[in-house]
Image 1 (cartoon, rainbow, N blue to C red):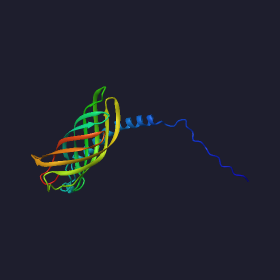
Image 2 (image 1 turned 90 degrees about the vertical axis):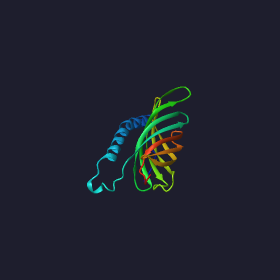
Image 3 (image 1 turned 180 degrees about the vertical axis):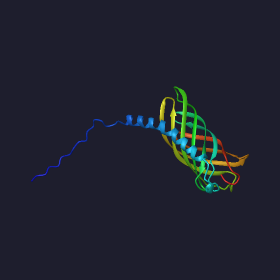
Image 4 (image 1 turned 60 degrees about the horizontal axis):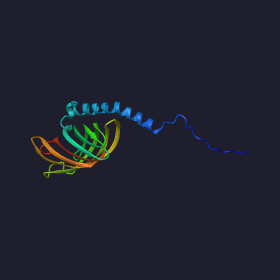
Length: 190
């Protein structure tokens, strides 16, 4: 008895090309991203149960101005909130909108991102507290939709004045980026 092993070719008809897959993913992001933001906001500001009210971390709001430099320059005004996930870690959901510019054209630009922030001085032992952030960002510029970026940032948060702290950030994510803003803060913790 002779057994023959033949190689089979996979059919190529009906296979999605990468552009169709990216278009479908972009459409899904347009629907899922606002819904996810709504759920996160609702969870952050929902009333806690009576037993957990004392230990529940509070959301801290922030307002910011971000400048991006790269193949497409952009300037965004935005805001968001951050939830403490322990003494050193904060999880932030941010959104911003503004203008983008290339050599030939300019127009509307917007972004949404989720960042994890590690505070090196969470209990304000020093006047300025450094931190490192990493996360993902989805950005739309001019006519292009939903480009994803990895964001890596270093920053410093200043002293509390009237319940707010000035912060400065620099890093990468959709180009080289710089940010300045105000963040709600408590007197003892960042």
